[in-house]
Length: 327
Image (cartoon, rainbow, N blue to C red; front, side, top):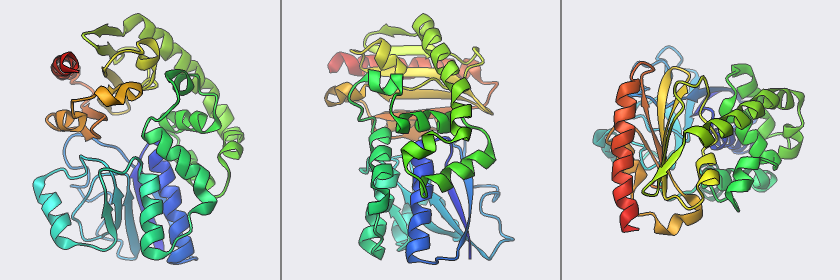
């Protein structure tokens, strides 16, 4: 059996979910299965619509999707997600609810997809996730932004956080697959010492320090909301915790960055003051074709839509300032 795992690309939780599903499948379903992995990126519209990720010509492939939006396509055998914005339309949500596919799992209250996969596979299929406890713990901590302080999240001393930084920046498809395979075969500390990670991490850390300096210069806090725009700086998306490192008392962050093939508006709430959050960021982002979680989300636009991105970011920041005033 060939198994194609579609996973949230350039995301530690996405890669960890793919690795954990692989471990589950090999342990509980078919030990001789052959796996391949395809990273999925959120963008305008339905990324499943053209059939490229679920090709009709491959009837011998079992398709799995983890940590990414739902598709009603009958070729999607397995699905696990925890994003509030998992359904691109009400019709898709109704399809999920009415179909009751026993291999489709959804829980928007789950902090990470990795831990959700572990819990559901253990409860339904008897999977033992114990050998992967450290991976599950770190994926849950990273995706829930439950770090002790902004310093921990920005200084990146822990091996798992170095891997988080590497996977968010890596664009080498071969290394993405190697990393997923390593996640279910090796301890995190061992992976962080692999040459491909260390060599790749050095320029990434240089960019990280550059991003920190650029955000020191460009980020501003007004009414409890930090805003920044690095879309013209030839800089990938900055570490999302830097704004809280620079402005530890802020309520929300709205930033624009240039990603491969798109502009990204990142929206977040301060995880170190989570109790005062009143705005639902997933709801806000969904109005502009994006999505995410109640505490963090994003909107994607075409690379040439910078003016529109700036307008949307300004509208979101204005709404969040009003929310911050009430908090």
